[in-house]
Each structure stands twice: as structure tokens, then as C-alpha cells.
Length: 419
Image 1 (tube, one colour):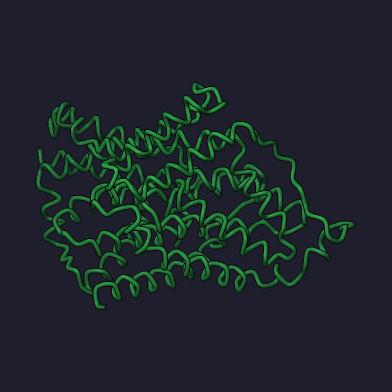
Image 2: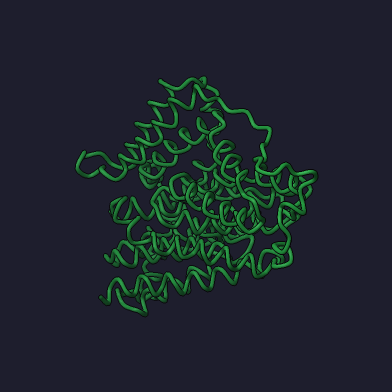
């Protein structure tokens, strides 16, 4: 049983690795789903045991947020905030600043994968409208979506996993990692400007054809303002309730589901249309990963990993998490890496190390184009519009931002335990 679980785990993660390589026709969810089914077929887990291994709190949080995000998307909310804010930029550098902070802020309170999926076509349209090279702005979008998402539990899937399993409150999580994200966004702006300094030498006045002084650039997007009068306040209420979940006696997943149910009942978008927008494949991917990891945990493979990693609430422990996150996030991506680390972290009982894992696994995703799912979403979306972001093109900015932000993250978290 031990060797069966080990072989299944290796095959599953090889499948996950190869799905993230260009032009490979292997699907990440199908690789994880195969591993989950194999764990049951080969007797590592019983069917009921496999079902119990699924963390339904995480699934519920993801589902609730997906329904809310899907409604906001159909309302045109994302296009509205992107186009309205970015249209007021008067220079390429100011456009970069606004884009970086909008993407980072949106990714903090909504799942970053959804944010980049919706923002990428908007950014490409804006850049082409004012005759700018879109590459610096798309790379900044990728980096900002990861860095911004690090500050909250709802920013990305790995933070959801960590937030639910660690028991850290939404507000406490935000307060501790906010400095990392804010400083990280500033690093992105300076790094992108330095790497693409030639692209920031001209002004819009020299680029826009026949510009009219004092006018604002508008973009052809449609918005359902009537529907937004319901969906946006509900989204705001959900975020507000996240901060008061403990006094109210409600869990974060329950608040997300409450918001999702309200937006389906009270919103103006047909519920069936919203539900079709939900990424059910991502939910299957997560459920399957939980089963695979529980299988290797049951046979004692995780015990060896726990014993081989010495994690304590000190400088070495924080540095160790940052180091292993940097390496393994490039191998299996940060979400599967975090799932594997959960059983290890549960034996550590350190809030600082949980925060270190959230920060490091997210920031490490910026090192290469295969480090995080958001990276691949932007790259694939851009390619549909005829824009190619090559590995080395991204790497020269990504690795610079990653190393600086990881060092800042280490310093901020070490300061937390040393003061």
C-alpha cells in the first residue's frame, strides 16, 4: 500500500508538472482526478475515507467567491473599474502605476486568477489604443496580481487553504501581510520601469493620434449599471463581514456562500447564467488533490517529510519556508505545493510560519511563467490577441521582483517575532 500510494503520488505530480509546459496536451485537473481515483482503486483509501479527505470549507469558499465574481463579471464591473481608472492616465509611467495598484487591490479581495482573466483583454485594448507596447503592462499585471493577492485569505486559492487550516482571522491576516504587498507593488513598478525603460521615455501626447487636450480616453465596454446596484453592494457587504466573522459566529466560507446566495436571488443576472460561469473544473482539481495528499499522509509518507523538515518559529524556519517555496513553486506550482505542506504545517503550531507560507508561496509564483496559474492565464489570453510573452522575457523581470519581495517578506515576518 505504501509503494502504491507513492507511485500514484509521483505520477499525479508529474502530470501536474507537464500540464504547465507549453504545447502539452495534459490537463491538470485530469491528472489530479486520476490520482484520486487511483488511491481508491488500489485500496490506499476507501471511498468514504476519500470523501472525508476533501476540505469542503475550502471548496465552499472557492464556490461562493466564484459565484460573486461571475456575477460581477457579467455586470461588467471589472471592465468598468479598469477602463475608467486607466483612462485617466496621462503618461505611460502613470498608466503603469495605476494598472499595478488596481490589479493588486482587486486581486486582494477577489481570486487573482479571475482578476487577470478579466483584466488582460482590457489592458491590451488600452495599450493598442494609445500605441503602447503591451508587454510591460501585462507583465506588471501578472506580478501585481500575485503580490496583491498575498495580503488576504480570499486573494488566491493557496491563501484560502492556509487561512482556513490555520484559523487566522481575516483582519489579522491582512494586517500582517499588507506591508509585504504594498512594498511589493512598489518594487514591481520600479522593476518594470527599469527593465523596459525605453518604453517609458515617451508621453501619451506623442503617441496618441490627434489628441484633444483635456479629454479622457474612453473604451468600448458595456456595463449593466442597474444590476451593479445590487451585486456591488453585496460584494462590499461580504468583504465587510469577513472582518467580523468571529463576533458574528460565522465562518469565512459561510459568509462567501451567504453572499453568493444573496447575489443569485437579488441580482438581475439569470442565476443559471451565473452558475455556468463557475469554474467547476478548478473545484474538481482541489477535491482530487485533497484525496491524493491524504492518501500519502495515511501511509506515513508525510511523516518522513515532517521529520526531514525542521520548522521552528525563528529566522531559520521562516527562511526555510521561503526557500522551499521558491524552488517547489516552479516545479509543481504554488497551489499543489501548499496542499502538500498543509499536514506539515499543522504539526508546527506557529502563526508566523503559516503567514510565511502564505506570503512565500504566493510571491514565489512570480519567478517564472509556470510559477502560478495567474501567469499562465495572462500568457494564454495575450496569445489569443497575438501577443507572446516568452519565458525569458518574463523571467528577467519576474526573478528580480521575486527575490526582492521574498527578502522583504522574510524581513517583515522576522521582525514580527523579534520585536
